[in-house]
Length: 110
Image (cartoon, rainbow, N blue to C red; front, side):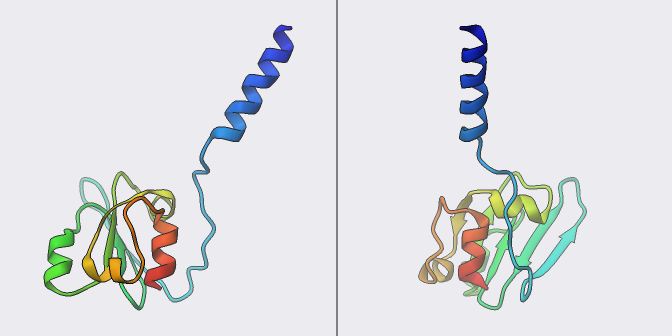
């Protein structure tokens, strides 16, 4: 009985974990990193940008740029699986929404 329970727990654990990586075609996307206390990260497409929490959506709104913000990221790959937590009106018009992944947002900002 105990081995069966262990197998069940392992199966549940493996199937319920969210993937911590995402595949993306980086072509047409510019990546920038500035090392500060925490890294300032930006991925820019032709229609807008995905950025870390250092970037302010209100500023992007003033400059009429499409931007989506993700937080708690340490590199560009982290940005792909992170959840978008802020969106400028221009990004919203492109279909970017709070709650989608960074990779989903980038497909709309390409």
